[in-house]
Amino acid sequence: MTEDLSFEVYLSISKKKFEIYLLNKKNLKNIFKDEFFIEDESDSIDYNLLSNFLDKNIFKIEKLIGNFLKSILLIIENKQILNLSIGIKKLNYGEKINKQYLQGSLAELKDLFNQSYQNNKIMHFIINKYLIDGVNYKSFDEEIDGENICVEVNFISIPNTLNEEISDVLAKYQIKIDRLLERKYVNNFFEEKNSDLSVSAFKIHSGQNYNEIGLMPKSKKKKGFFEKFFQLFS
Image (cartoon, rainbow, N blue to C red; front, side, top):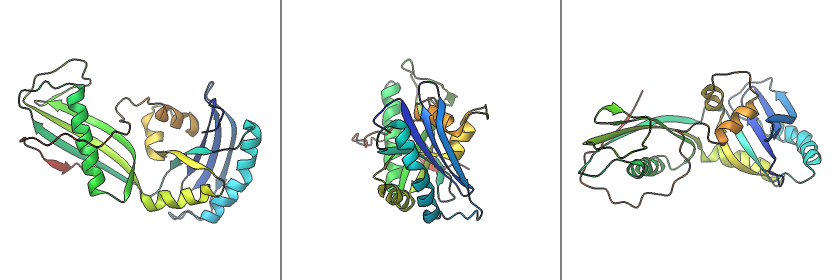
C-alpha cells in the first residue's frame, strides 16, 4: 500500500492481460486504471512485457498519489495455482465445542498443509463447512455439545517460485507484494459481475467473506487420542 492509506494499488496478472488500478478506498472508485492485452496467451508470464507495463504506469501512479509506491496487492490467475480441499474429523472427549476449539482444528489443518506443500504459499484459507455430529452449523456463537466435529476447508496457494519471480520484477521498482489474491476466487465470490476487479479484490481483502481465515500461528497443542482422518474432496 502507499503512504496515503486512502489508496490501494492492485496489479492483476493473467495469461490474457495485465491490469493495474489505483483505488480510492473511501468511495471505491478507481482514480487510475490501465490494461495491456497479451497477444500470445501463454500460461508462462512474459516478464519483459510485465516490466514494460510497469515502466509505463508506476510513475503515473506515483505522480497521482504524490509519493513513492512501496507495495501493491497482486491478483493472479495461473495454471500453477493449487486449489485443494481438505477435511478433518475429530472425536471429542467431553470438551465444549466453541470458537476456540474450532480454531485449534483450523490451525492443525494449516500446519499439515504447510508440511505437505512446503513449496507453496497460501493465498486463501476458506472454511467450506463444519459439522457437529453430522449437523451443519453456520456459526459458533455458543458452546455446543457433540461427540465429533468434521471441518472441511479450501486452500488456494501459489508456488514459491512463481511468487519469487514476480517479486523480483517488482523489486526493481522497490515495490513489495502486500497480499496475493487469486483472480477466479475474487471474480466468483460476488454475485454481481459489474464491479471492477479492484473493487471486488478490495472487498475480499477487507474480509467480506466471513469464512476466509487470516494467517494463524502454528498449532502448539499436542494431538490427543482422537480419531482423525484427512481426505481430498473432489
